[in-house]
Amino acid sequence: ELYYSYMGFKVGRFDKTKGENIVNPNAKMADIKLRQALAYGLDVDQMTKAFYYGLRERATMSVPPAFKKYYSKDIKGYPYDPEKAKKLLDEAGYKDTNGDGIREDKNGNKLTFNFAIRNTGQDFDQALADTFIKSWKEVGLDVKLVDGKLMAPKDWSQRVQGDDPGIDIFQGAWGLATDPNASSLVGKSTPLNYQRYTTEEIQKSLDAMGSSDMFDDKKLVEAYQKFDKQFREEAAWLPFSWKSDLTWVNKRIKNLDVEKINLGTQKLYELELTADAPAK
Image (tube, rainbow, N blue to C red; front, side):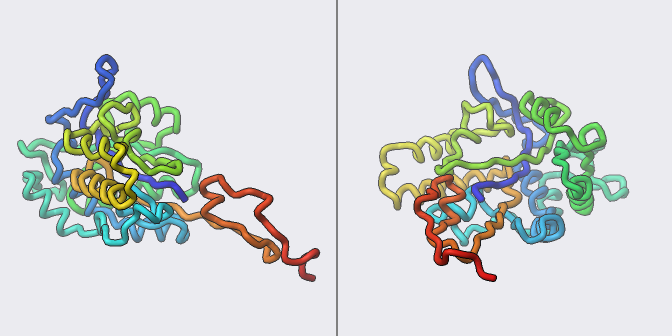
């Protein structure tokens, strides 16, 4: 599907007067090594197998495989590597100073991260949230659910969009249209950039993706992959999973194209029946 879920880290706020996202260099999630460590600390391959019955897989970039032109198998994302996560945290100065297994901040003070995850109505929602928290605890980070529970979708939307200072980490998801250009989701001036992360270099790459030069397919692919590499390394958000859907097709039907169904362009008049009646 044209979908991905992701983990976002709050690093700023949206200034409504200026109409742009403002990065706070002193935000709790401002340290890039901390964000990368949170990524390496998750065994997403195992999580998708355990909770989604093989219909999801670990996302390695912001472009789902359904976009064959822009997707690249060579991009590996953040595979599970808890030792690398611990090393990054050590380098960043997050260390367990009192021997309780939980890391303190760079000044030796108690450190807790507040995680916003929605109650989607699935029977595994709580187990999924618990797995996130357990995984991060194993690399020494204390993560707790906002208000100690899963969030109602409306509450999640209001507080994440409103830059609630009580939220440090959040899980979100996007369904994309026919163009995977991420400008409307991570650009400097979009309110949908819930992380509030932006840099001049990332914005230049986003602007380039919409320029007239991009009528050249080769340049367009290069531009998409350049942006994705930049944004992935900055780790302001972490693509978590891609989603697959099952389409059941009667054996008598011919000319059905699943990609067209995903894009909403499949026409009924294009379909044919190979037999007048179903098999008995």
